[in-house]
Image (cartoon, rainbow, N blue to C red):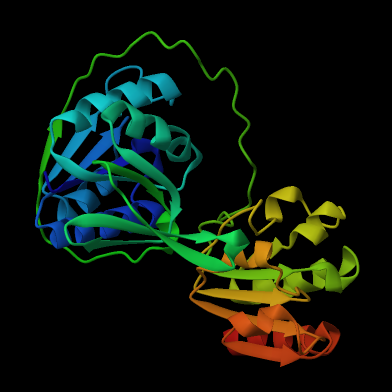
Length: 320
């Protein structure tokens, strides 16, 4: 029993999150000497199916009525039925809200073990080991998953993608769906202009050190000059300077951009937990002892007012 299953919702498409889950699943399956199977609930785009085929030995699509509109009970029942007979050592799901909701319940139904917010997965002596942050991001903990399957939701967008040419099969599946005892009756979609914060490859984020809402307009010019999305610390959001959905941190969004520019953000552990997977971090802060400088590749000890405007002008000139 050394196969790996990844669970996805058809609505996601072949985005960065799906690519991260599939890439980690492929690496884990290879380490275990097994196959990688993808289970997709709901209508899957051709782009998603083709992307999964390149990395998976089999792609199973369950797109019958009742699975297009996510409901926890039906999604859980479908995953349980489709995963049971596939000899899975591990089942990986993404960091979307739906996957987070059903991960522990799926593990319980399959008699396995579960872990949330996984950053890395390894195989030691035939056992799956998962790494995640602890103590508010101040340390990393490694857990050995004693019961199979290990059902894990992973920081999908922070994981490396993978190249593949497996050419797996695509098949349709039908499952018995129960009448749900609990049903989602209303959804509120967060409005975003362009790319969401979680999907952004470039982020310009501001903190309490900016002193008010007006400087965020100045940061907008900097963000626009490089096509970045704006973010903020919890303190800036709590003060009402920017919308709550800008918050990056332990209780906000967890992001993994190619570049994270932290301006007037001290770097509390809760904030670092939300942006710690960034590929490159740059910071501007007046305090040379600010914790953010211990976690960045480039740092400028200076008042942001003396940096942001000339930097924006330079970047606009380079863009032109």
